Length: 107
Image 1 (cartoon, rainbow, N blue to C red):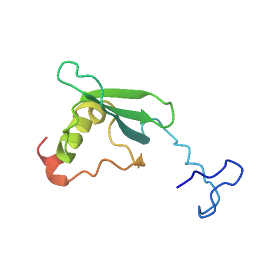
Image 2 (cartoon, helix red, strand yellow):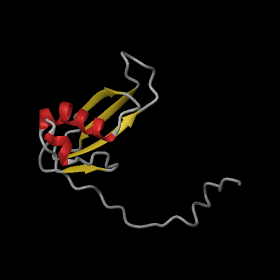
Image 3 (cartoon, rainbow, N blue to C red):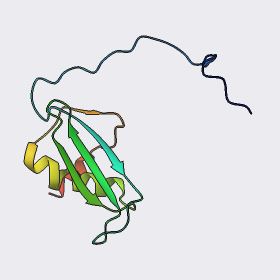
């Protein structure tokens, strides 16, 4: 399969209006989360969880491991970001955090 020439563009891609994200009214109301993976091991960690405040762009870089599962992610989020900033009302895609009430009750 040959790549398309730059001037030809994508013939099957849907086009539409781009809508900007809403501007949060206060800090830590809206966050985005992502992982930086495949880092050289350091003190037993090989991955970073990056949590960014969408209003001020303040960030937390939290060391973790590639084998982190969903309950572990929830626990890591609660013990690092939640304890400092409280509950956010919106997590921008990718939606990595789906809190289960049973995870919160273990606190």
